[in-house]
Every structure is written in structure tokens, then in C-alpha cells.
Image 1 (tube, rainbow, N blue to C red):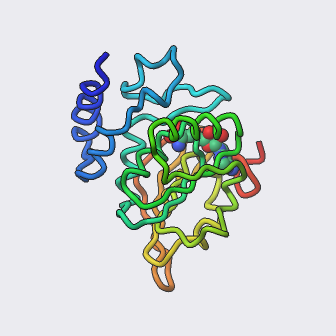
Image 2 (cartoon, protein in one colour):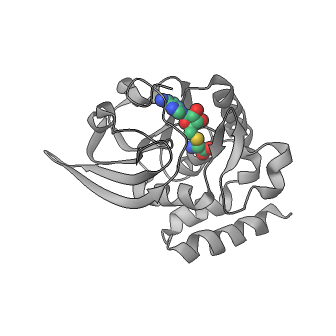
Length: 213
Ligand code: SAH
């Protein structure tokens, strides 16, 4: 497998073909070596059109889902972003190419350290991973220009809306354990606008303001 070719095919057939248009987003997907974020035995499937296991009962999301969330977040070069659910570190890597700084929270420490190591090897030094409960957000680094939650929530954690900057967006899958709706909340001066971006299926967001287990 030639990874460069595999990424071009992925971008054309999975992203562009389904309406991902933002040229900056597409170029981040051409740049980031997705195969580095999966285990050795799955590398040959790294650019395929589905999620893959990363151990601990967790998954790296389907490329299209990562692209859809990234495009919906509208990251800009000056932005400070927060991701909840580092997992493999792939979504954080994509975001790091498109903004100034990415903070990412992961509850499973082995996943956090594996992702950190890959980011270091790739020289993606604007990503800061913390171990903890992302349903509480990250108050000491707030406000954020954008927050993306990459695990399914039973409801929207209040802290995440509170930690958005004015004009900031929160992208979050909300629903039951098997099916969720991808939502975008945009914070303006005194209101919060809510939009639906379609159905999706994520692993559970587990924490104080998420699922209990
Ligand atoms: N963004 C990831 C996909 C992660 S899967 C990627 O690009 O690979 C969802 C991740 O969310 C899992 O690793 C899971 O452990 C983590 N998670 C679930 N609940 C969490 C919480 N409350 N805080 C932080 N991480 C959480």
C-alpha cells in the first residue's frame, strides 16, 4: 500500500464524493498519515471507509465522520480548540493542522500516552493531551473557539456550552447507546443556536455529565 495514494483515494471517494468541500480540511486529510494511528495488524485497512478498533473497546472513527465533524467546526488558523475523547489521536492530528492549538482529553491513560507518542513522532507539537473526564470540559484553558466531542453523550454537558467563546461551536453526538444525532451548537452573545447534522454511531461518553459506565 502506498499511503500517499491511499489518502488521495480516501479523499476523493469518501470525502469529496459525500460533500466535504472545505479545501483546508481536504488537505489536512491528505497530509496526516492515518495508518500511524492504528495498530500494526490493521494498517492495511487504515484508509478504508469504516471505523477500526484501537483496543480498550474503543474505535478510531470512520474518515468521513472525522471530516464531517472537522468541517462543521470551521477551524481557523488562530483558533484554540478542545477535543473530548483523544482515542487514537487522529482527530486531534487533523485539527492540529487547521488551528493554533488543540487541547484533547482522554479518560483511558494508555490511549492518551499512545496518542502523545505518535504526535511527538510526527512533530505535531500544538496538541496537548490530558487524562481526565472531558464531560467537565477544561475550565482553565477556556474559552474555546470550538469543541468537538468524539463519543456519544446522553445529553449535552452544560460545562461545554459554558466554555465556548462567543461565536464558538460545539459539535457533539447526542442520543442513546446505539444511535445518536450529530449536533452543532453555536454560541452567540445571548443565545445558543442548535442544528442537526444527521445520524451517527459513536462509543459512549463516560463521565460525570455523560454515561455512568
Ligand atoms: N477522536 C478519536 C475517537 C475516539 S473514540 C480518534 O480520532 O481516534 C472515543 C474516545 O472517547 C475513547 O477513547 C474513550 O475512551 C473516550 N472517552 C469516553 N468518555 C470520555 C470522557 N468523559 N472524557 C474523555 N474521554 C472519554
